[in-house]
Length: 266
Image: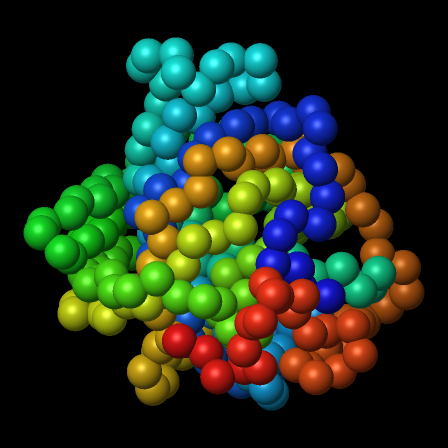
């Protein structure tokens, strides 16, 4: 079940931060195109028959270990951009699989130890009047993006909005193992948004064809109380991918906010 609020408490976080000025640009893909990029033990989590891949640029703010107050001056704040898809493991738990993470802070590269695909680059987030722009270029060249969005009115999240934005664990692979990283934060305060400019080579670099059709877009001013737990190894049982879930299948529907819509989306 995809929950609107955090599924678990992260009582002893490995890292605390805020995720601010976040845009979500979601594209549908054929499930088989995305499944080909997943490791054994994870399956595409499909919504209305499609796999989804999301470009999510944002500002990582006030990054700190547990016990350090967020009010301490000089805490690291930097731009980050994820390209992610939605998966389920053999236990039926839903989560995120990152195809790439572009980051402006070299400290985050330490997460390569558990297989998180960080790539250092030059990234920028800027607000100009009522538009927000994101740009990034991976060091070494060849991979880049430019995105400009115009945020709109606050949303009352529908089932699809919750499904596309709310996940409470991420997966990575290293040393022949899958690793689960739990996350806890307040629910996303979502707004409608319109893309005014979008150019990117991240999907192609990840092994996907160019996105087809208009994306679904969300914007959030952000969440300020993010708690990332320590990654823990998990070994899938059996062989081959578990069965993909569809929207409407038992156990696969989002647990949305009271009065959430039934899949119309933003």
